[in-house]
Image 1 (cartoon, rainbow, N blue to C red):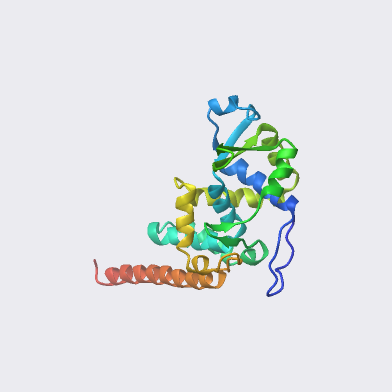
Image 2: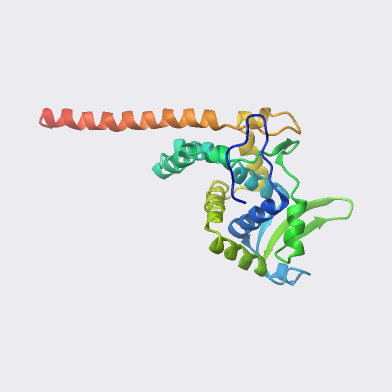
Length: 245
């Protein structure tokens, strides 16, 4: 699952079933919420350790994981609101590197936003006893699907990262994604992602285009403003000292 050089222009990079399975496994392990005691009495969930509730939420979290350019741009959004320097620094570490090109795996835009078929990846995890999916509703109409990580899945996820430190990248990025999604449900995440013009204007069933060029230009503007502010503060202090203030 080690990424190679950026794909040639016009070629959309794709992932294998095994790549998707590992990414979803690490996503469940680091983004899941605690399982209710009552849920563990349900068939197949006696060893469940955490859950990501709803396909919408899983797909929206996976979108930011698969698209570092969008993740970085959202960090810039949060920085402009809070002015917390770590947010700018993390966004810069992504945009100053080739991560938006090397680590980007575009998703198709469907009626309800970014979506990719993860059934094959889930089949791998479920077949190995690492994860489980439970559907709510009726046979005719499924209202919601929840995705559970099982104890064995957590063990395997930790073993993968320990044996292959390169997968630690996904652990760190999932943590950023979870911070962005803090307190937001799947529908709210969808609304936030639709605020991105490139995302919203992508035609249905086409791959959502990158925002890396715009995000990098935006980063340069924010850096310049931060530098000017810092320089201005220094000048003000010097003027005050010259005037004996």
